[in-house]
Length: 268
Image (cartoon, rainbow, N blue to C red; front, top):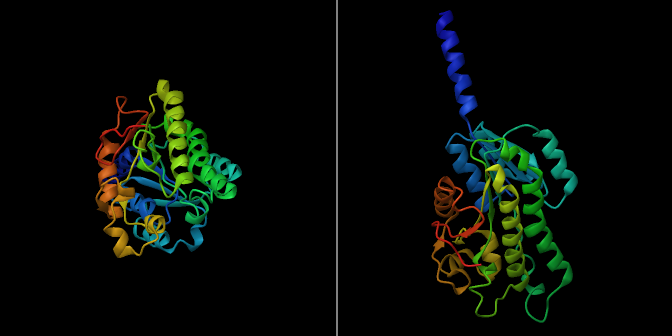
């Protein structure tokens, strides 16, 4: 009986040591929540962050279902909150950091002729500074891990090479082009440490943000091609499944690239 107890303890310890860890920002709904769900289902240790977890009822319910989900408060624009979480997670390896938190911005305040500085600043703060600072702050945790991966969710709307016509969301487009450069900077900075970084386009996903982007209801938006680039509409589950497949294969040859959800490269 004593030997059996030791064996079971060793097996439990082995599982604990083998568990990989992912940190997801903006985990309260949509794509972020789906990342949390799918990685929890894969038996990863999941650190799910959002600005106000106490009223994120879907996330709370998911954490009750999966005991491997740890919920933390994090506003990616608040440097003090970032530093506090870094201190709390000190020396904890993070295999995969997913910078998912993002902002669409007020559509009416970024159309041509109506570009608003406050809205522009908000977009740059959340969509660019957030991923850049979070990646910098948790870089030691990522370097200490086995997989060493950092991802940011970008958008094809930020592709300069594919910008051949006016966009209804120019400030958003500029912020997405800027975050690509920010994460390229992270990639080159951490390449010698073996960290692999990629910018991922999730596709045209049926989320609240997409509906806001087009000013449509859910049914209309689900049939809309993303910014007229011809990409099929996906559910959050379909999009995240595709992106995880790309992340699983992310290596040195792909680091610093802007990738579609099927792994193909998107022009800058």
